[in-house]
Amino acid sequence: MLTITDLEKAYDSHQVLRGVSLSMEAGERVALMGPSGSGKSTLLNCVGGIDRPDSGDILLGTDSIVAMDERALCQLRRDSISTIFQFFHLLPTLTARENIEFPMQLIGLSEAERQERIDELIDEVQLSHRADAMPEELSGGERQRVAIARALSTRPQLILADEPTGNLDSTTGTAILELLQTLSDRHKTAMLLVTHSDDVTHICHRTVHMRDGQVQPADAAGDTE
Ligand SMILES: Nc1ncnc2c1ncn2[C@@H]1O[C@H](COP(=O)(O)OP(=O)(O)O)[C@@H](O)[C@H]1O
Ligand SMILES: [Mg+2]
Image 1 (spheres, protein in one colour):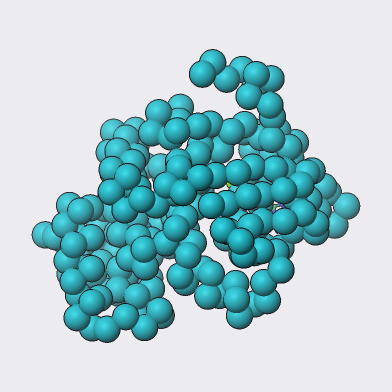
Image 2 (cartoon, helix red, strand yellow):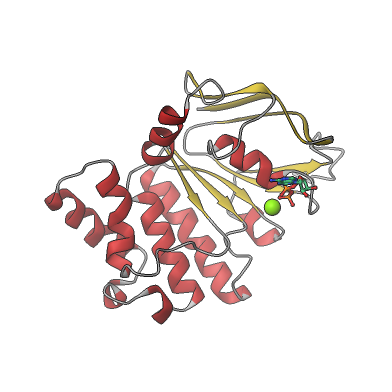
């Protein structure tokens, strides 16, 4: 489903990605670990079409993300790849329901279809009772549940999550991870999750370690699996 080959990226003279290669199957969950500054967010941003690599390729199915123009990247971010952030990034002036609805408006789903999906998703993230709340009225865990429902609303092939529990206490974080696992299985959505937490690796099929802009071989990274 996703094939990353020899990705390189530098900021000025600082080489951040040094030939990263990584493949993911449809529906697979991969944990991406590594020290701060090792290039994890940069890699996610390149896959999500927010940032551009200098060389190498990223194929989603048979489509090269690297070769896409801005218009195609916009469409990619709307239709195929959703992102979940550490600090939720909900729109502050929209209710929980409206935040979930927003990406579906962008892809032009009908009112009836949007309302049906919102009802289903808000129930799946157990927030039906908070549907009309504003983000500032919600706890961190509740905000992340809204963000997860929003990310799933367009039925993407892939969700990118950059430290999705990094701003939550451990009990809330664990609940969010269990939810991500359940929903990714149910909706058959692949996930690439950046994390510092071993908890995240438990809900993933596989863990990949990065260091200095490179993916470490599994044995060198002390992977015990
Ligand atoms: N927009 C940017 N401009 C300049 N340097 C950047 C930018 N984004 C990231 N970097 C640098 O790239 C390196 C890797 O960053 P990042 O991908 O965020 O690492 P990680 O997510 O693993 O902590 C860091 O040294 C960071 O300072
Ligand atoms: Mg980062």
